[in-house]
Figure 1 (cartoon, rainbow, N blue to C red):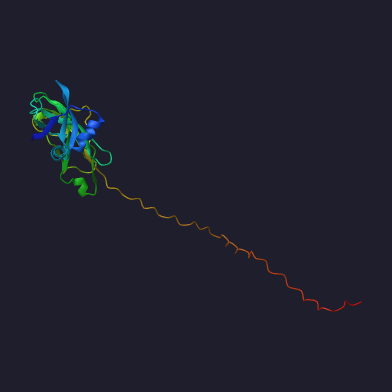
Figure 2 (spheres, rainbow, N blue to C red):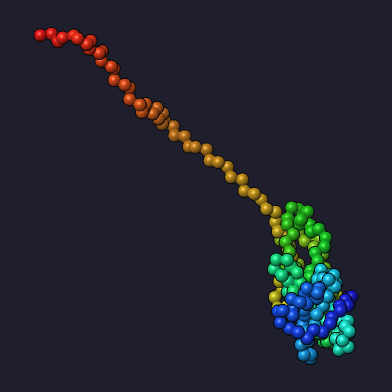
Length: 230
């Protein structure tokens, strides 16, 4: 794998105020530590970090360059990156110094290639895991592991034990989990409306009665001045 070079510089001041000043200058606070090293507070150039490390996939070995003699030449991995929750701006990073003679565990991404036979039949390719844990030397970290899904039919799956890692890379696991499968096609259920049941010989329902009452016939008016018969 390719080794990335990244510049770092020592920083003396800690605290929120000092880190805000550092970020305004385009720098990002970081810590450098390792199994056999004391923790060192350093700073990296934000633009350089994003261009070389922040936008690439997987875990990569990084060689530090620095004006400080005790920092230059160290080989590290990025262990953690903190970003602003809204702007996604880089806020802080942890750099872990590795021993190139000792194997380490880390996760590498999975790449699925080919078009599955089950997909040709209408199935759906369903990745279950996007990365897998490997054990290897820091100088042998693969950029990714490739899985050819071409032969997968519907309900078929590729498991961890099916992977073929490159030389020097082991894939330890306790459970042989599925990594990708092909799901059957989704069939929409068509609901048919039930026809109303007709009962033979049933009498037709009577028409509803007129709710408005007929007006009473008006009586003829009695002429004025007419006397009643005695």
